[in-house]
Each structure stands twice: as structure tokens, then as C-alpha cells.
Image 1 (tube, rainbow, N blue to C red):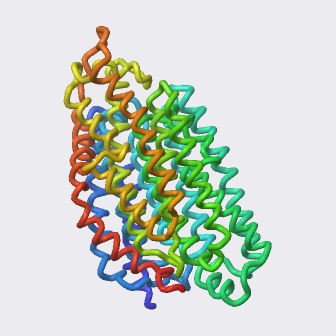
Image 2: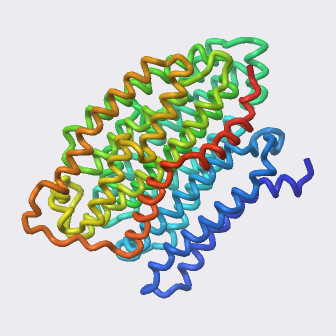
Length: 489
């Protein structure tokens, strides 16, 4: 392939790198009093980059290996890149007032959002275990700084320290597993691993390495029992950062899992499938049960996010008898897309309540329907979507995942998922009760900041709009079919 075509296919990554540097440079010349406009500028850059990604849709109809196969340009990678950049756009708008009021280094904040998205894009396009590792490290380091960005709050610094230490453990687990795979197969490139497994079968060293790689990504998506970092980090991080971490980072983890499990390790699916099924079941059950006693809403949403990771893992586990399942990948892409807007919107509402004299406790939401009826209604819609109430997008997301699982014969996971969804309604409605039934007790009026209100409105509109899922499903089906693993037996 000629060099010009390679650089054309790498245009989204190069432009994201340029956007990260540009937003920092703009911050240097922008008057301090106008820094809230930096959030809008970052959002516009991210939306423009979404357009660049979608323009490459026709070029990537057939997967194109880059640099000998260490990276792959395909529609599945483009779909995930669009999700990451949409997360940057919405979080940037939601951060405009928060960052200008609370952060000293506003430009660096938005620059790190773009740098973390760049790492996620590398993960989504990886064609080699080492390329995947580079993406993981860039994402982890950027997010570690963002988690600890509120330097005047000890809890933020503590959360950043926990995230980087536990993230280092996960990275070490991943790279050691990669070394075992390399020692067994003699390569880390996905296409060569696929051919080697088909020829030589699964060795003990490869099996142990595969388990360690899966465990590392289970940490990234906060699946049980690798979830211990999520509640503390979500609670301690600045709330807009929590919104980004809980959605974009999780989507990147699932993009990596699809790359690894449905391609080089597809021949070994008899082993990893059981592991993923156990992770899915534990995450759905433990996440929902531990969310019930939480009195801090960010911790409650963290445990809810663990359960949501379990639902997504149901899609990963929906392997068809003949191998790769486009239906399962289609369902997973749609689920992660609607999950992005639902969770970002919920955390931004939490941010508004906290900035109006409250805190992260559920008691701060008492009487919210009388202190800010529009905000209370927005949070109610988002929570009902998380609970899977029709016709909201969360219902369709779970329905497509469970449908794919049932088609693959995973009836036990479907049953656990349905029962877990019913349990989740208890703590979602507990928040609704606090907003609509509990007295306000002379709590202050909650005033929506302009930028955050716009971001919440966008999220609620899309959560309702995705109740008509056909356009996203059409794009997701094209992405699932174009994946290199789709052609494997």
C-alpha cells in the first residue's frame, strides 16, 4: 500500500492529536475570564472529527491492514472511534462551566480528553497485541491525570493514585500475558496468531497468556471481580471526568475484547467463553446487589456501571456455534452507544446538584422536582432508561443483547440479565422517590448552568431518540460485517 493511502486512513488519529495540541495552544492566548468557551471549542473540534471518521466509512468497507498488519482500518474501528469522540464532545460541553470555575489548567484538561480518546482509537484499530498495549497505556495515563485533576480536593488525588496503581497492575498483567502468548506462538500479530492457532492448536502457555489478557480488560471495563477500583475512583474524580471514564473508557475496553476474542483467540473460544460467561453473570448480580445499599449517588452509579458491564459481556459471550456473531457485535455497539449518552447525562445532573450547594449523597436530591423540575425530569428519564423501561433506548439496548444471547443458546445469561434488570429498578426508583416524594427540607434551589444544561438536554434527547434504533443499527450491522474476524469459521 502506498504511503499516501496509509496517511489517509490514519487521518482521524492524526487530527485528534492535532486537536489535543490546538486546544492547549488556544488556552494560552484566551483571556482567563473567557475560558468557559474552551469547552465549546473542544466540543466543536470533536464533532468535526466525528464527521471525518464517518467520511471514511466507504473507504473502510473492506478491512485494510496498516504497516504490515499492526493496525487495521475497518468500519468496526470507525464506529468505536465515533463513540469516543461523541463522548469527548458531550463531556466538553458539560465541563465548560465546571472546568472554568474549578480548574487552573483548563486547556490541559481538554487536551487530556483528546489524548485519552487517541489512546482509545488505537485500541479500536489494533491489529497486534503490542499496538493494543500502546493504546491502553496512553488511555490509562491520560485518565489518571484527569481523575486527579481537582488538586485542591484530597479525594481526587487519592482516586488518581488508586487508578494509576491498579491500572499499572492491569497493564503488567496484560503485558505478561502477551509475553506468554508470544513465547508460545512466536508472534503478537492477530492475523498470524489466528493462522498459528488453526495450525498448532492451543498450548498451555497460550492459554495462560489469554486468561491474563482477558483479566486485564476485565479490569478496564470494571467487571467483577476486577471492579474494586471503580466506586472509589468514580466518587473521588471530578464528576465530568467520572462521566467520561465510565463511558468512553469502558467502550474502549469492549472494543479491545472484540478485537482479541473474536479474531486471534476465536479458535480457542471453548476456553475463554466460559470465563466471559462467569464474568458477565457475576457483574450483573454483584453490581446490582451492591448498588442497593449505597447512599452516595456516584458510588451507586459506579456499581450500576459494573452491572451494565455485565450486560455488555452477555453480548461478548454470545458466540454462535459457527464462530463470530455479527448480531452480537451489532447489539453490543448499539448498547454502548446509548449507554454513553445515558451515563454522561446522569453524571452531569449530579454535577449540577453538587455545584448548587449539595453533595453526592442521595439526600441532596430530596425535593429536586420542586427545586428544579426540568432537571428532575431529565434524571428520571435517564434512570428509567438505565433500568430498561420501554420505549427508552436502554430497553432496546438490553433487548438486542439478550436476543443475541438467546440466539446463541445462552439462556442462563438471559435469565440472570432479566432478573438483574428487575433488581436494578429498586435503586433507580429510590432516587426517583427522593426527587419526587421526599420533602425539600429548605434545600437551596438548583440552578442549571448553561453549558451543562445543554449537554444534559442533548443526552436526554438522544436517549429518547434512540428509541427508534434503525439508523444506528444499520451502521452497526455494516461495522460488524466488515470486521476481519467475521470471515473466520
